[in-house]
Length: 471
Image 1 (cartoon, rainbow, N blue to C red):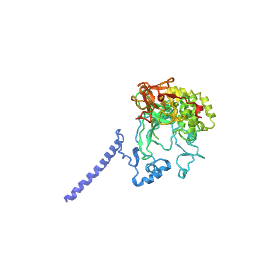
Image 2: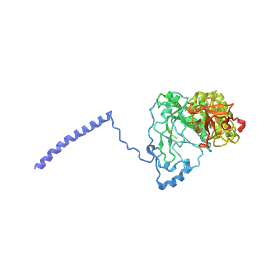
Image 3: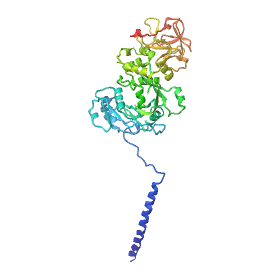
Image 4: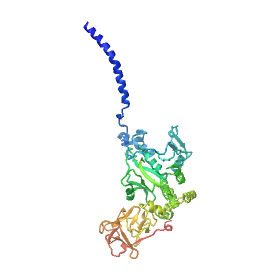
């Protein structure tokens, strides 16, 4: 009887507490919705190959197959297929930006690819070119059908980090004239490892008009005042309307390599700007180099013809429309571009001679090879700063009776200061007061400096190469 009575008491008591428990549970659940402090759910980091930009390594047993697949596209296709299409990449931005102009569509241009799987229907806008037309004309086709306020050109072998586009749009919102370019990070062609680039280098070009990376000049670093989020003004890297106003890319150019060098002087000489900022992972064709020289470089084109004499034999087609564009835009001369926009250029604006340094003794060489009289790699510039330069290298000597070396020029004179005497035909090293001479026994393959003695081995001709000589 006692056991039965106990159960009779518990049952009604429970019936009273159940509604109360339900009320309290619902009450506190509703209050939790109003809680301002919400815990961020813990997310497991991605674990697949190549995630967060890490290298993906192929096992030894698959190395032979990997090498065969590499030949198809000249990068590790096996790793590319292992990595997810939208793999995660590390965040590298310095700032956050909002309220920007629209860039609202992706236009994929198929430049008459011969691969069947690329012809399947896709859920994006694909422009099919009727015939292979080259990168520049494919870009222009995509630009013609795009509708956003901003045109962004992106090659298919690129990946983008989170937030890469917003800083570029912010610059265009502030001023529609800049043509902005992100910092180019690197993807390993072997492991697809993501390698962070640097904001202390920018794009430029050398004596042969090949695109190169150079340290950002000190004047640009000073302009930024330590703020790494500010863009670097570059002489080589849009608002779609402004892109049209300045004449877009030159449709006469086919493959990549010359378009950035052609459009950059045009934009600067027209009054626009180029900016280099933020993160995106990613040689000049001879005919396109010749087009650039003949259209935009004024009297400086002869300098480049001497450096690369072969370009004048290339037919670059009808350029009358581009010449008309230059007149319409009322562009400043190329000399202004070098002196005002690109003073750090390797191109000497003022020099005494441009040509060979030839020893007066016939058939006697000053360096490793005999002079061939055809310009190109044997062209030296003796500048008004009394440097003897070829591209970004300068004749340099670090010790008495030492060999002559070629080092990066530094504009600090010192070991790179030379005095040419056109009467004595001597090239004297100012710091040591010694003269340029044939190689000594220890350094027989390279020129050296020795005490000046007037011998023929110390007499050199700084020849000015002229166009008729090499063409």
